[in-house]
Amino acid sequence: MLKLSLDALEIVDAIARLGSFAAAAERLHKVPSTISYAVAKLEEQLGLALFVRNGPRVALTPAGQEMLREGRWLLEGARQLESRMRQIATGYEAELRFVHDSLIPTSAFNPDIAAFEELRCGTRLRIGCETLTGTWEALREGRADIVVAAGEGPAGGGYKAAAVGSLDFVFCVFPTHPLVRLKRPLTRDDLLEHTAIVVGDGARSSSDRTVGLHLGQRRITVPGMQAKIAAQAAGLGHGFLPRACVRAELGQGVLVELQVETPRPPETFWLAWRTERVGEALKWWIQRLDRPLLPGILPF
Image 1: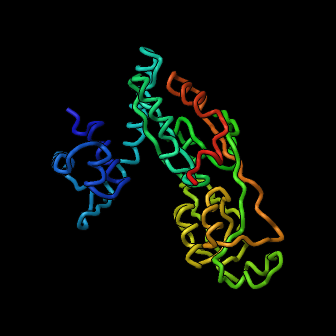
Image 2: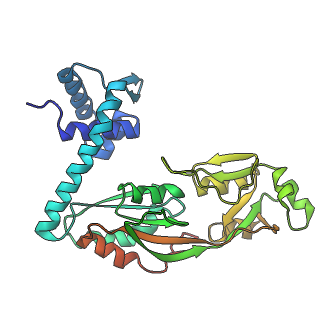
Image 3: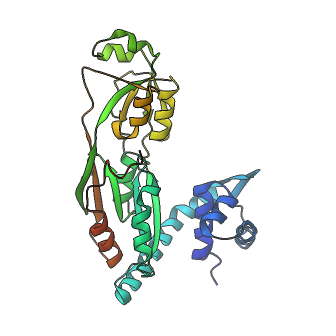
């Protein structure tokens, strides 16, 4: 009898991704003691350690890494099989994975999520959030069925896309920033003398995407747009920000807009989805989100 089950692989995968037993328990809707017992039992049956414990944080051992390297393919295959079986029987997928750009808060989609839940179709909804190229990468690598992503999509096909809006960007700094004193359109050399605040790209295997950043630029990299806005409002650096996201800060004088010789062009956002299997749930989300989303969906 096999000692390694799909349930066990799912538990180990969740722990590895989230970094702790407690976080994995929350994600899998289990109590932490159940997670701890399952891992201990699996390690005993296999006769090897899967994790190195360091207080509440854990990391995979080399054996654990090797198990997950192949195990994740098994999990993905099982999910696809389950989805195909359910789709054959009902037309609806077992699970639909929706990933959106981190600039948009998940709460902005709450009306859409509520409308989908009212269908009571049985499809589990899994929502994720990625930054810049990371959103497109999730679609390309099969970790998402449908995305709302910024910028150009990856080459190679396998998906369709529709523009759902764009954002205008303004160059902003704290009111006492040295660049304010120049009182003229800022040049590349002006910007290079000061630190830029940039959002880190969430891509795991693709090349990082940087926008509005010059070669050799001093920078502070932050995890998302809200952190970028906060850093610039604290006077830590300069950079382009979506006008729709900083109307309040500009109106209150927390940030000031400056002119630059090379402004950042508007950013187009896309609704994109995988085309190899389009079930009823995916059709519903395509129809629901194929509308002008940005900037109106952003909280002001």
